[in-house]
Image (cartoon, rainbow, N blue to C red):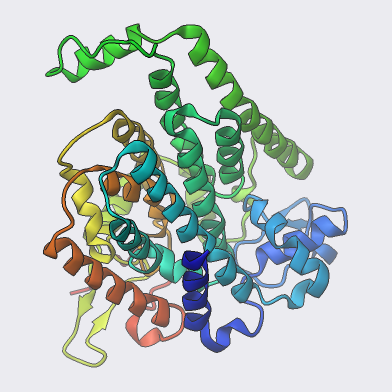
Length: 425
């Protein structure tokens, strides 16, 4: 509760006077109003803005997954389109770090992470104020609100998936995350591996060849009791598939096709690109990798001396502590499960049709950042002076981003083409 109160208070304070009014892109508020009036299209077929609205057969739609609209619906029912959505999402954002701390405490007390309570607090603070989550929490607009909703669901998913303890709940929250950020569906391998590991008999022996990863995995698979594993996997899959079916039904009712999500009907400048290459394609990987790995601040001799591309900054720049994930002191099954979920999710969003544009830090990392923090906790490497120095740097840099992004244009490039990633010559 204290973690929630502190984080929510900081997010609201960071908002300042921007909390007192609606944001510029209130898609979820509009969608909630449509649901309250029993329809799927925008009320009056007049979208409140011209950014990322879809038109199909003369009607306008919000194509973003609908769970955040359901979350804000009670406030919309009271205040309609005058709801202060920035304030609402900033208050909601405190839930993410609070549940992350619950997860870290579980890893310490039940899994044996070996961390102290102050280490768990440091990792929670790193995520809350030293990652892309900070600036995302104080925006309120549609793209960032989705991350604010997806993060606590991801934390719950990891918590329920450990040792496959709660298959139904794990499937439910993963399905809910899918209805918020579809890329999170790629986190499913976490539960699958944990379910297989949990389906081994209690007296199972260790691997015959501990030096071979292949031999270790094969030995563990041979010990799995199929009935136990299938039961757990079926319970997990039931809510996921049910929620996916609901989403398919919404697609059919809106666009006449269960597999049509509506993005190609967006009235945006990049619609031809989506039409040609699709939403996800290897074609996008090179540019997105450039942002993910090599996007740096632009240095200038004129005030304000730095400028940031609208593609944002590389992940290791804004949260350098994530680099510690690459050198764990020990490896355990849960770390394999977490890595097997984080890697495909990261690769999936790297093949998405944009880089996260427009952003300060690489916001798509929030789809799997909870897993990175869990890997830091389990890695066994001591958090020394270097780690804490990087933590302070991360908090300082992301505080700058939270205070300036979409507020002080002096620090940000004004390119509108998506073609300028690196500082021009």
